[in-house]
Length: 205
Image 1: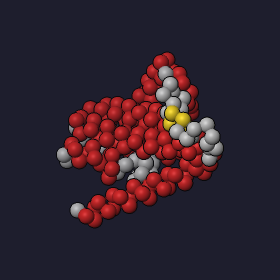
Image 2: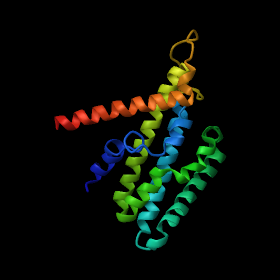
Image 3: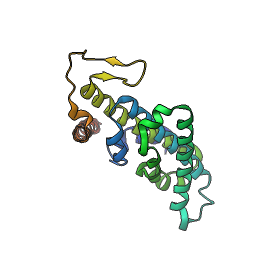
Image 4: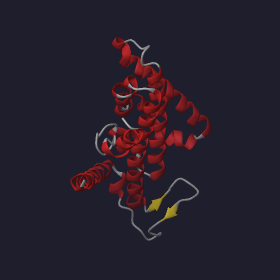
């Protein structure tokens, strides 16, 4: 399998959020702002990349009967390291992600890639797969967070020094967009639009 195809697979063809619909708990809960979405996306990418590397290197060593527990231990190790790093150097991000940061351990995207790809492929393809899937996840949650923040708060990049008040002070925020119901509605719209665009491109080809 060509490396570009592996990478494209994670971004478009098998996007974890918009196609596979996995890991949606954190997607719906954390994406109230673009910054939160980006932070969660990069966190998942880091853990996915690290776990793919280790599992690929150890794929011929880990006994088949205990592969799932072994995968979870590897993933949990990277999540713990990530938590410690964020708590030490990026406290605001650590607090914003909250309980959903340790729950990355059970994110279906990461465990699925460990089982279906990293445990069966060499190092370089596994790295590309981790990057593709991670960035595909990050793209989806960042865009979702940006749209929810835009209509729910009237800003972009809230919580940073670069916050932009898009609609001005007179704008009345639509609270539904930062509520769980708004997350479900917007995610459904995103999935529909994404699949329509992809299917049209496939039909043309």
